[in-house]
Image (tube, rainbow, N blue to C red; front, side, top):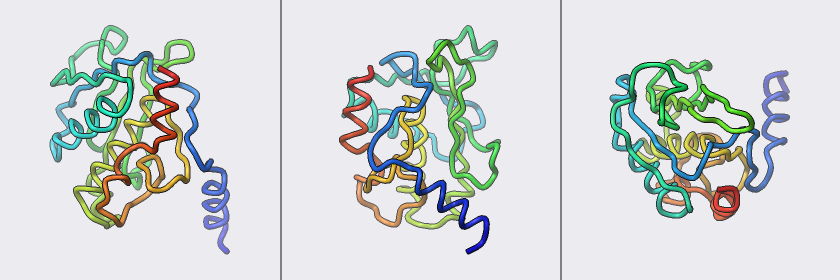
Length: 180
């Protein structure tokens, strides 16, 4: 086994079986989001993910604020800025990064999606785009990755078109509702 495979195995082995909260969840139960001018490949997926994953099954409210404002982030009411590309790890499918931490919560964050990598990784495309966006939205409300399947918080490409792979597990929903 190569050193990289051993490291990957160690990382995967550390993922819990069910939902966990990360260290810096969102700042409240209303989750406002916008689409940055770079997010052009599939804006409908961001809308679907926010509404279907958060607004329906959880006690959270997702509000679309259209185009992201300009100016300092600290003056913004936007919680999640959807952007395309520009990930720290160019081989990643998506990335969540808190931009304005306030105490133990995240006031404003970027969710970056790497559509070319999603295509390169294979699998059913509309479903993998949606799963990746839902996965990063999960991080934006404080969910960590886990190995429960099927679930959007399980890392990696999905090979099934089943809706359960693009939604939060019941343990994720319970954790979100208990937190917010």
